[in-house]
Amino acid sequence: MSNAPARAHHRAPWIALLLVPLLALTGALLPATASSAQGGAGVTATVTAASEADGLAVHVTGSGFDGITGAYAAIIEKGTESSVGMSGGYAAFGYWMTPGAIVDGAFDATLVAPTAALDRTRHYEFLVWQGHTAPDDTTIYARTDIAVTDAQWDAIFPPPPP
Image 1 (cartoon, rainbow, N blue to C red):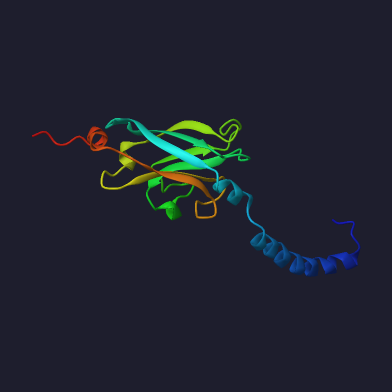
Image 2 (tube, rainbow, N blue to C red; image 1 turned 90 degrees about the vertical axis):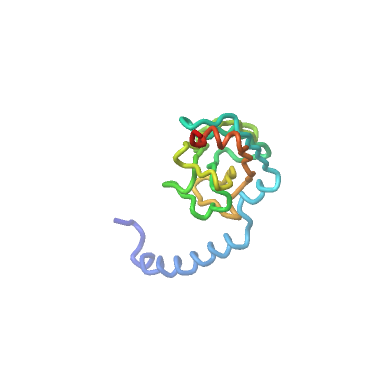
């Protein structure tokens, strides 16, 4: 039950009708705060271990994430960010939304992609994007290719014995 006068109840839909497009227009005209961080953010990804039992361990570091206190990160097949969601589309996922995950604009972590999530014939990349969003051109802070050597692929997918 509301204490507002009856005439206010009749005005509410009209106010909403005017306010919603105005807010949408404001969002379209003003840049997102994530965009300002994209210019200075950078990441590196280095394979630190590869095995059939454990998959691919990738050490990732980031800097230039000033003002960003949390983000999502993932190892994905290169160019497939449009299929990444909370339920899949990645080989490994990093949930860095907790306090302390990004400190002074930087992070240092290791993501492990299990063997079952990898395909030797594919190319992989590491990307970091705005939390609680899907990765796309407007939400991705930074990305980099992951260089996997033939020897590392052989460790993950051993060749058949002669």
